[in-house]
Image (spheres, rainbow, N blue to C red):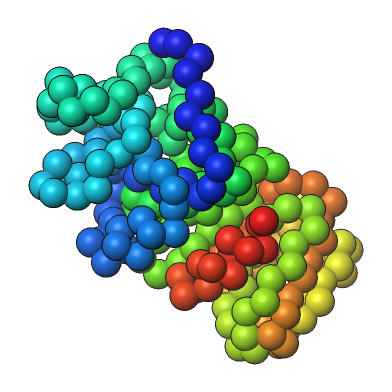
Length: 220
């Protein structure tokens, strides 16, 4: 496969093959200047959905690749079996922020693989959007304006230390976080504005879906 890069000057919607409601798609599409489908994520667009700018993956789930090509949609076949379709897309999309829908829910192993991909793409603004939650890898210094009482779950996908925090009900103060050790799920905002600092990548932040725009601003 070529080293084609998909460059966008604004947010991009990356659509996977997992569950995505029509309401979710309708909410996310206007926020984005581009739409890329990961393999079978394009299938739901065949029945009158928005036209993708490109389709990328190992194409083991894509229906009617020839039909998409006939419409002028680039269909990029990457045969690499050591990376997921999500990872393949992340390595080729250049955008200020990527909203990735269809990668959470349904098969739990696919959700875990998506978390793995976030860690491998540390330093990039990628937000996994589910039906209930949004999830992203925290930058070393993270700050967001939410509201008092909002759920702010922190889960270490790799060992990381929470150096300090502001506005959280249970603060992070030189607190080592690791799976099998201490985790920060079901924390919540004690104030409207929250912040946290970490010693490296590895802290996944989960917020209620209604805070998607706040999450996007926090990663800008």
